[in-house]
Image (cartoon, rainbow, N blue to C red; front, side, top):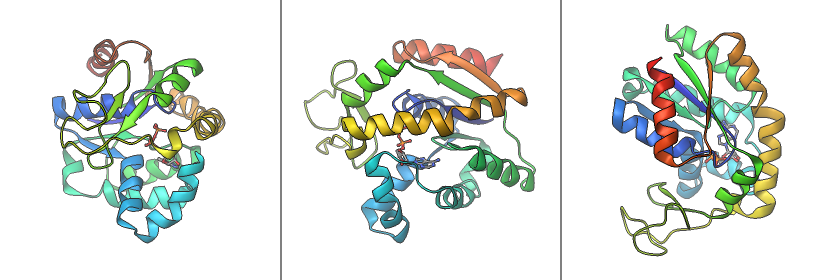
Length: 214
Ligand code: ADP
């Protein structure tokens, strides 16, 4: 099974992707996590991406397409993958089509998580992330067991620079202009399924499973 999760920042793509990975043994491909790891390691890719990310802008297509080309060629992706945060533009989706057909591979579903602007703002403002393992928490709805540190590895949690109010508004705008048109792109080829992403994590998970089974 090869899937794409679409949705605005903070829609819950990462949370749901991690659950699908556990449940179906899929490879989790998160461009956001890969880019943050590149920044942390100080690589050339990280240095190129950092400014865009901190401002809440999309990183140029050629950089992320290169990341994905390399990542989905790795052996663990052969058993199926869930793309979280890619594609985010129509040119990225076209590049993905090309890569998949060259590998005689296809997409099975594209699931869009629908969340209101107000919820997006609230979730990103209250999101805290683990810089070591990428786990995310919500200060109110899904707090860590011990305040301020990651449940898994006890790393102090951070408020990502792109989760600051100005960058959040920019990310929402980027989503509206560049990513939301992907819904039409995948609707036309019959792959799109839309679900309500505004409920509790388990409710969203159930709605997602229904779309994958049906
Ligand atoms: P969220 O889904 O909460 O917005 P991500 O971790 O997926 O967060 O992405 C964080 C940032 O990484 C984006 O705002 C953007 O700068 C960059 N990024 C991630 N994926 C892509 C992509 N496919 N194309 C361009 N930029 C990307």
